[in-house]
Image 1: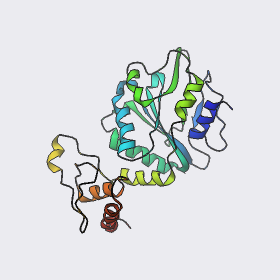
Image 2: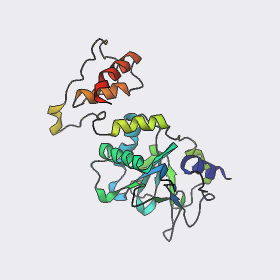
Image 3: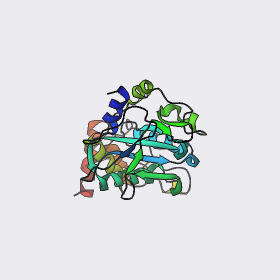
Image 4: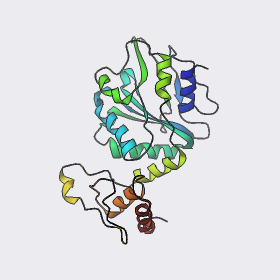
Length: 261
């Protein structure tokens, strides 16, 4: 097996699904849902009209707010960009849809629905796997370094076939999301989860100062930002902050117990 095929299988394959050799001319439709309605890979597509900024915001939010591994990103030709989320363990389709909907609400609220696709869904379960030739267009889809994504803002494709070895090296740096981390992130994305700091604008007047946790030392060492609109949101952020002191996280968890069954 080619090293690129091995990396694609590691990140996006599932049992019983054989991925093609590297760089298929005709492309390959990746089936995202197994026969028993389980999902290993999720994809968010953003049309060229959405530009690069929301892709960058999504990737930044996934890493800095949800504390998840960076998602892989591909240029998708006439389809724009695709952001790929690999799961170490499968989840039910309904849970994958909830995760994608949460990402959309949290990080992509400003993107027009016509410029956005969430896969898989009940209506669409396949996605073209990169890298591949975009039929009849003389263009190639490919995975890219997200740090270089702005270079593709005007042309979301490559004019020549990417190097399979370089694509394999790039994908080797990405990790799948572990089961515990996925559930933790999903709890943050659900309604009532930890809030992203509020943007400037009409909401600014509603922002509350972070509440003190009874019996804990001052939170001078916390790095969860500000702009939380209620105490529960702030406490969830403290509990999920890997940089916070253990005692702060424990006290926040205790304070949150009445909110959860």
